[in-house]
Image 1 (cartoon, each protein chain N blue to C red):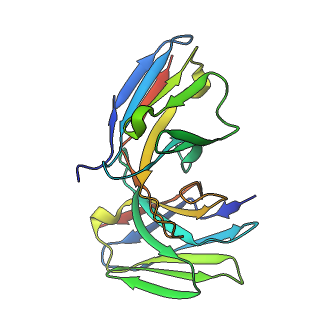
Image 2 (tube, each protein chain N blue to C red):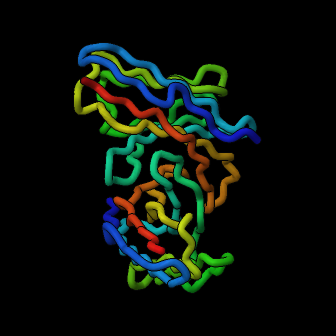
Length: 116
Length: 110
């Protein structure tokens, strides 16, 4: 178990540019989540996948955001035409769906995005 | 919808006890989680309560009262490494889709 890994750890970009983040979940986990966290706040849910199917997207996720999970393994989150308000920590988490209420999430260390 | 409140910051000395309170309002209840997050690092799972009462796990304990919409995380024998943000969270309509509080920053002083 190598944990959830995210790449890159830090990304600095100029307003208007596109960025893409990658998440590699724990290998046997079939659920994958994206959260966003700003300074002094808790993580906010963005979207999640069950295997390769994207089952839910938050209203926070504008049309500029798109997430994929081809083959149900790693996932990518792309932000197009970045805005300064997109600056945040983007956290990925995974879990194994056992159909129980105590499904705990294993988080990656996140990608810190700064939009200049 | 969900509304979760917890204090912004608490300070305590090494070896002491600190209690972090969390109140929540939910349209349905499916348990409550506590996560720990050190600065710049991933949140890590601490505890899960779905029934009323106290769950003890080493130096950390978590309490839940469903009728009062209230939980607390108790940290005993504080160590410097316990300085972190502690996040209270409740599941929404899907497991793993959590509503987090803003977190309580615990500062442990020598």
